[in-house]
Image (cartoon, rainbow, N blue to C red; front, side, top):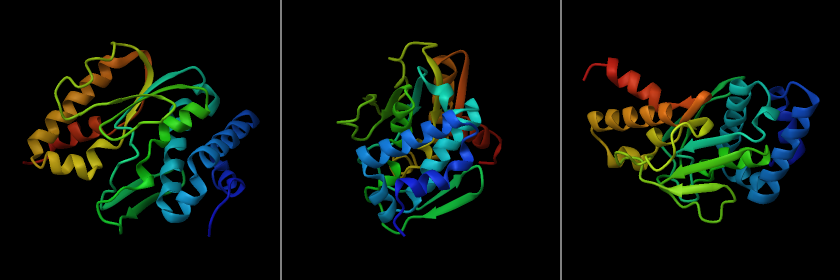
Length: 224
């Protein structure tokens, strides 16, 4: 069933806790539907709905309210792009459930990995910065094309310059796995990004989500 904006607002209503956030959620949905063709993209790829719910849920979990993002400078490392490929499977954790998305399309472009988080932040009047190796031309938020596998790739960003940040796309991407098949190389990149995240956050800044931290800890403790 093709969902419209009202149906999406109802499906995601559990994420909001007050009337101000309800208005903001409608604002976000309208932006994604009107500017980025969200309804049709969900119809083609239902997994996109779960991904966006996950991203909205992370904001609420980290800040308590959607309204808290206004004016915040937020970095999204490996933000997704308009040329991203789909992994074979993807686990999506939302406030209500965990969903596993199975890719049946092969290694082709997917709307699921467009830069939805930065687009959401824009609609919430935040100041997002997106980092990705893929194509981000035409996006309204500040963005940079960066190969995150390279040491020092984020050195150009000033220290303690972000109110919040996240990374959640790099380590599960087919491109990353193909580029770094060796476990030790993946651990090196995870440690680099984890350290960069610590450098880039302001004092008291919010780490919304970090696959780099989880991967570094996991690979550090698991047997070779």
